Length: 165
Image (cartoon, rainbow, N blue to C red; front, side, top):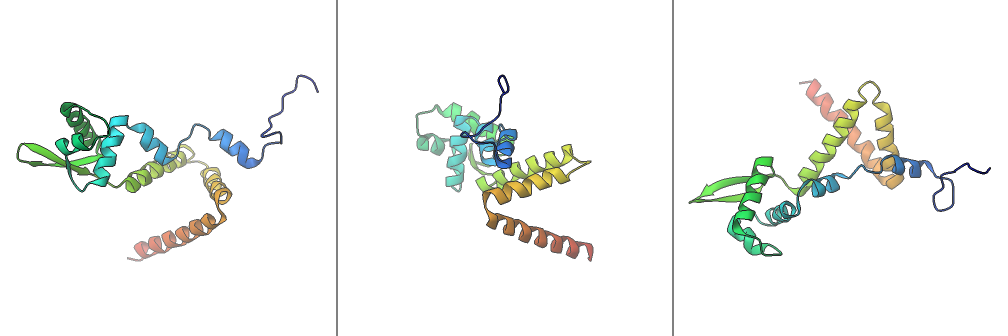
């Protein structure tokens, strides 16, 4: 059939998993969203903040992989504070910063926000979103499906306990 184009993946017809990946192409993992949502200097400062219990601007400057002006690091840390990524307290005339949440907590929050927005967008019919989640989990690792089932059971128990209070 000349003129007719068929989608193939590595010379074979695409599987459902291939199609799903194609449809979700452009969607990023929570880790990628976090990494791409911050600038290079912001990411480096956050990495330092996650490694140190507390960090001053001067300490951050000393630990940077490349030489960066004190005022640039100070501005970056202030921006991260205003975005909610860093907490700070005044010590003398300077601020000492610490990560407001762990990397894992932030990635979890980004992922939760993504799922929540998908469910809200499809509020009238959330089942396709949930079905896609189950398919994605089982495609990746069958043991994850068991973990998902356990999490659902635990959540039901928690909700039942709250309801009975």
